[in-house]
Amino acid sequence: MPIYVMLTKLTEQGANTINRDAGRIKEVNKDVEDLGASILAQYALLGEEDFLNILEAPDNETIMRISLKLASRGTLRIKTVAAMPVDDFIRNMK
Image (tube, rainbow, N blue to C red; front, side):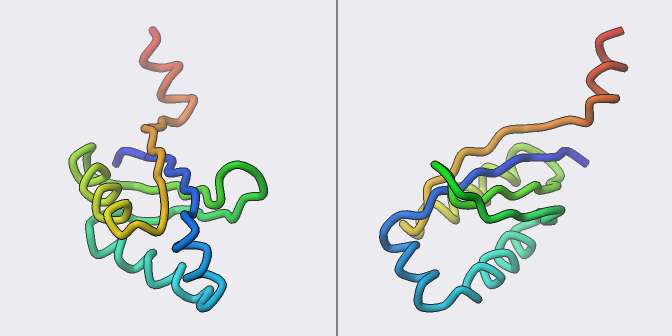
Protein backbone atom coordinates (compact mmCIF):
# COMPACT_ATOMS: atom_id res chain seq x y z
CA MET A 1 0.00 0.00 0.00
CA PRO A 2 1.32 3.50 -0.80
CA ILE A 3 3.15 5.46 1.91
CA TYR A 4 2.73 9.19 2.48
CA VAL A 5 4.60 11.70 4.62
CA MET A 6 2.35 14.37 6.09
CA LEU A 7 3.93 17.45 7.65
CA THR A 8 1.59 19.65 9.64
CA LYS A 9 1.91 23.10 11.13
CA LEU A 10 -0.60 24.20 13.73
CA THR A 11 -2.48 27.44 13.23
CA GLU A 12 -3.01 29.67 16.26
CA GLN A 13 -6.40 28.00 16.71
CA GLY A 14 -4.78 24.56 16.53
CA ALA A 15 -2.10 25.48 19.06
CA ASN A 16 -4.79 26.74 21.45
CA THR A 17 -6.71 23.48 21.04
CA ILE A 18 -3.61 21.37 21.80
CA ASN A 19 -2.75 23.56 24.80
CA ARG A 20 -6.23 22.98 26.22
CA ASP A 21 -6.38 19.26 25.38
CA ALA A 22 -3.28 17.47 24.10
CA GLY A 23 -5.38 14.31 23.84
CA ARG A 24 -7.03 15.91 20.81
CA ILE A 25 -4.05 14.67 18.79
CA LYS A 26 -5.16 11.06 19.30
CA GLU A 27 -8.75 11.97 18.40
CA VAL A 28 -7.55 13.38 15.07
CA ASN A 29 -5.59 10.15 14.51
CA LYS A 30 -8.85 8.22 14.85
CA ASP A 31 -10.45 10.57 12.30
CA VAL A 32 -7.59 9.85 9.86
CA GLU A 33 -8.06 6.11 10.30
CA ASP A 34 -11.84 6.42 9.87
CA LEU A 35 -11.16 8.20 6.55
CA GLY A 36 -9.14 5.23 5.26
CA ALA A 37 -5.48 5.64 6.21
CA SER A 38 -3.27 3.95 8.78
CA ILE A 39 -0.80 5.94 10.85
CA LEU A 40 2.49 4.06 10.82
CA ALA A 41 4.48 6.61 12.84
CA GLN A 42 3.95 10.05 14.34
CA TYR A 43 6.42 12.59 15.68
CA ALA A 44 6.14 16.00 17.29
CA LEU A 45 8.77 18.30 15.77
CA LEU A 46 10.77 21.25 16.95
CA GLY A 47 11.16 23.66 14.05
CA GLU A 48 9.06 25.04 11.22
CA GLU A 49 6.62 22.13 11.23
CA ASP A 50 4.86 20.80 14.33
CA PHE A 51 4.14 17.16 13.44
CA LEU A 52 5.36 14.51 11.03
CA ASN A 53 3.11 11.56 10.26
CA ILE A 54 3.93 8.53 8.17
CA LEU A 55 0.69 7.23 6.69
CA GLU A 56 -0.36 4.27 4.62
CA ALA A 57 -3.36 4.82 2.36
CA PRO A 58 -4.80 2.91 -0.60
CA ASP A 59 -4.40 5.76 -3.11
CA ASN A 60 -3.82 9.45 -3.75
CA GLU A 61 -7.53 10.17 -3.65
CA THR A 62 -7.81 8.89 -0.07
CA ILE A 63 -4.86 10.97 1.15
CA MET A 64 -6.22 14.01 -0.71
CA ARG A 65 -9.61 13.60 1.00
CA ILE A 66 -7.93 13.29 4.41
CA SER A 67 -5.76 16.36 3.82
CA LEU A 68 -8.75 18.46 2.74
CA LYS A 69 -10.96 17.31 5.63
CA LEU A 70 -8.26 18.07 8.20
CA ALA A 71 -7.25 21.41 6.67
CA SER A 72 -10.86 22.56 6.44
CA ARG A 73 -11.04 22.63 10.25
CA GLY A 74 -8.71 25.63 10.30
CA THR A 75 -6.43 24.19 12.98
CA LEU A 76 -3.49 23.16 10.79
CA ARG A 77 -1.73 23.53 7.46
CA ILE A 78 -0.65 20.37 5.68
CA LYS A 79 2.08 19.32 3.26
CA THR A 80 1.76 15.76 1.99
CA VAL A 81 4.18 13.87 -0.23
CA ALA A 82 4.21 10.32 -1.55
CA ALA A 83 7.13 8.17 -0.41
CA MET A 84 8.56 4.81 -1.37
CA PRO A 85 11.08 2.48 0.22
CA VAL A 86 14.58 2.98 -1.21
CA ASP A 87 14.74 -0.66 -2.30
CA ASP A 88 11.58 -0.16 -4.40
CA PHE A 89 13.09 3.00 -5.88
CA ILE A 90 16.28 1.17 -6.85
CA ARG A 91 14.37 -1.79 -8.28
CA ASN A 92 12.24 0.52 -10.43
CA MET A 93 15.33 2.31 -11.79
CA LYS A 94 16.51 -0.87 -13.54
